[in-house]
Length: 124
Image 1 (cartoon, helix red, strand yellow):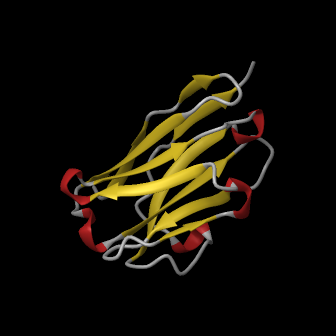
Image 2: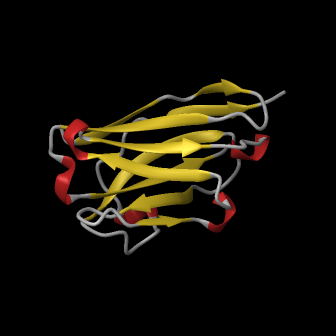
């Protein structure tokens, strides 16, 4: 089965940091862009960031405000999301998926190989 496997979520206090991992399962990541989404209770799913295949260029949602960094290690078949200065508003289940080779869309319906997500809870 072709999918991503997310990990690294947890419970942390405000202004803390966390790094999420997104491992490709059943396929090689090299030629795929990868995006992160999040879904908080009673809210719509939000696009967070995306990293292209090839040149590795990145794209971020405005609310990230320089706090998050997406990166990839094709040798490990894994994409990461480094999150800093977290606030309770960042509490959500975080998912990764692929839009194909390039980050041309931010709509979840255009992404594939969704994983089960990893819960991030920011609370004092």
